[in-house]
Amino acid sequence: MIQFLKKFEQYIVNVLIIMMSLVILVATVELGWIIIKDLMRPPRFLLAIADLLEIFGFFMLVLIGIELLETIKAYLVEHVIHVEIVLEVALIAIARKVIILDIE
Image 1 (cartoon, rainbow, N blue to C red):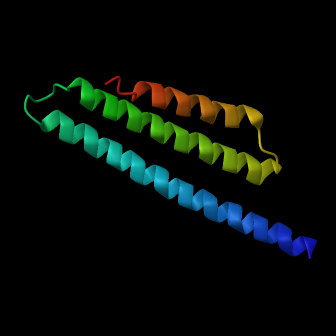
Image 2: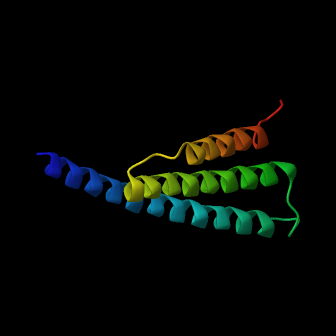
């Protein structure tokens, strides 16, 4: 039974890695689309503050996804959740909130 649970856990972690990779890929493509769309809008090659904040927020979101993927990979390899990686994800998430914070 224990062997079955270990295999099941490994299967679930592998599925999570695949899904997280897909989400990161889609978010990166979306970030590229946002950058191109904002740069092509008149006035061309100039970004408004709101556009920059949106791009920075999305960029930080992709970084959070990458760090979460790193956490899942570390768990798959070592079967231990590293506190440093979790804290790094939390700090990036807090930084993202501060960057996209609308003062009004």
